[in-house]
Each structure stands twice: as structure tokens, then as C-alpha cells.
Length: 454
Image 1 (cartoon, rainbow, N blue to C red):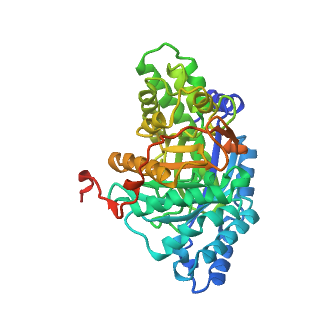
Image 2 (cartoon, rainbow, N blue to C red):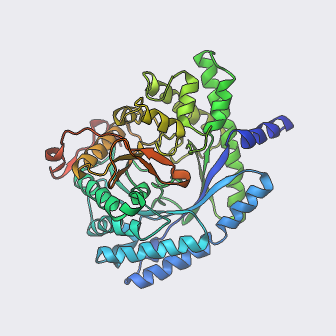
Image 3 (cartoon, rainbow, N blue to C red):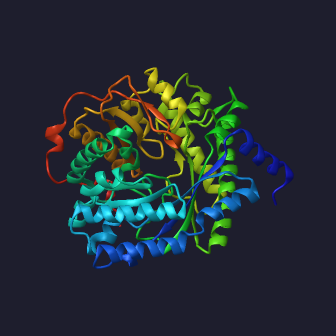
């Protein structure tokens, strides 16, 4: 039973510590929408999404009002479109038509993002995959709500370096085609290794082929809650520190469980997973970097940062797993630079570099996230950064990702304003030495020896 003390405690988290349900995401399989023509495929996609997700936004708003829990975003994830469009798309322009259809139906439903303009190419590229990847820059330039992702590697398959090379070029072209908006298209494009099938967080969300026809996934976030809890145990031992994070993560996850079950019941769609990820926002007091400082660092990026982040990530997972039988997705701490005021401050004063962020991705939930770099950065350098992150994910059997923005016309020292949850970012320097000869090699990096398990 929930007692009055827990009710008051949860209310304080919401009122003062930025606790929120970051997203309710409906995952929808579009495999049965594939048809022989683009028009028929688009018509089927529109009908199915409207039928299944038509009441999502209203349901989320109703739950929020009744329980007093902020639900910030309502989103949709779909089957990777490279699978759905394979039967009808013969050119990149055909895929762009599907992107426009998805954008229109997302606007009609009222969701802020729709993820799944995606391809899974960890071992090889089909003709459909190549066409979709070629279409990404235009698709993101002519839509507002579409998010795109490409999974280029996994522990079981290795890293598809042909896809890595393609994605470096695709990110550069996306930056160019959205240059008038500070290359915003790249903020909606992520390259993944070991992508999970059930991730509700954008831009990497898609509905995996192992999932049911439709599913409800909920993403919960509460960096501010964790920081406030840690303020009360300053100077205490690591044991006390860890227990405090675990207990706080437990409470946050229980809020997500309540929302997920209610949304599932009202929409008549099965509950999938709770993703407990400490996903920061630009709001003051809602920062993962501030948690690291509360643990004992002067600035995020100082010596000890990777160890502190590893501790935080592990305790968040342990607390979440105790609170729900279906914790999934990414679950842990996110370190997006532009969306975290503490990370922005650390990057601006030089405490945080791309190299240090890369080390931190070995132990956090995702990877190099929302990092602005000079627009003049070569495509091969971006591909090299993607390959490095994919290698960390492949060897460590974890999800890693790169969401990097080479901002056209901007250089180190400039600041880029993205707005909303995407925040703003200082343009960070990248290593100037070339990796072009490495990236130009064809084929794939083989799976590591420890992948051979049956």
C-alpha cells in the first residue's frame, strides 16, 4: 500500500525537483502496411497510425490531469521504414514521400516526434537500406516531427564500415540541407550500435520486428530528484551514496509504472517497458552534470568523472529493476551536451572535451549526444567518431550512439541555439588529424571473440 508520506514525497518531487514522465510512446508495427505502390503504402500507414494512436495525446493529458504527473511528450515509434518501403520504393524520392506522410499523420495525431525513419544495417546493406539512407537529408529537411536512425553495428555482427562511411556523408549533407536552421536536421538523426528494439527516447526510437503489433513504452526522467536526494547525504560514504540513488530511482520508476499501466488500460494496448533514463533538459536543476558535481566533482569532465558516472548509471538501473518487472530501453544516465546546462557550462570552460565524453560513454546509457562541431569537419572525421563509438558498444555489449551536428558556417567558440528540449550548445573542437584512409576501406569490422555464444 502507498502511504500518505510517499504521496507527499512524490508530490514534492514533481513540484520542486523537475520529476516528470518524459514520454509515453506508442510503438506500432507497419509491416502489414507494405504495398506495391508508394501511394497505397502511405494510405495504409496513415490509416493504421490514426486508428491506433488517435487518442494518445488526449489520454496522456487526461492521466496527467488526474494524477498531477507532468507527461512532457507523447510520441510514436514505428517499424524501420527501410523494411516497410522495400516493396515499393525505387528511388530516394519515394522514401521522401513516405516521410512526408509520416510527418502529416504525426501532426494530425498531435505527437511531437515520430521515430522509425530508420534502417538496421549492422551486417550489410540492402538496396532498400541504401535508398532510405540516401533520402535522409531531404526527408529531415522537409519534415518537422520525423526522427531518423541507422543501426550500423552490434556485438553479434561487428561494425558495417560501409554504412559508417555512408552515415558520415549523410550527416554532412543533412547539415547542409538544414543550414538555415543551424543544421537542425542532424539533431533528429542518430547512428547506433546495439540498438534496442524497445527504446521510447528520440531520436533513436523505432519499433523492433520482435515486438507486438502495438505496444506502450514509457520513459521516465528525474535528474533533479536524484540531485536533491544527494544534497541530503553530502560527505557520506559510497554505501550511503549508492543506497540513496537506488531508492530514488525506485520511486521515480514507480511513477512511470503507474502512468504506463493507466495508459495501457485506457488505450487498450499492451504495456511494454519502463525506460528509467536520467534524461536532462536545459532547465536549471535538471542536469546529470549537476549530479556528478554533487557526487564530488568540481565540474563534469574533471578526473573521476567516468567513475562517478559509472556509479550513477549502475545504481539507477538497480533501483529501477526493483520497481518494475519490465525495465528496458536504455535505462541509465544520458549525457547530451546541448540538453544539459551543467554539460554546456563544462564544455564552455574547457572542462569537458569530446575525448572525455567518449570515455564517459563507456559507462553511460548511450553515447556522444547532441554535440555541435565545426561545419568544416570532414565527413571522414565524423565517420571516424561514429566508428569509435560503435567499437565501444560492440566490445562492451552495450548500446552506443552518435548524434553529432556539424553546424554549417559555425566554428569553435560559436554557440548554436536549437530551442525547446534540444537546448543550445557551444561548438566543440574535434581532432584535426585525418582518418580518411581508414574510413575508405570497404567491408566490416568482425564481431569480437566473446560474441560467439549459443
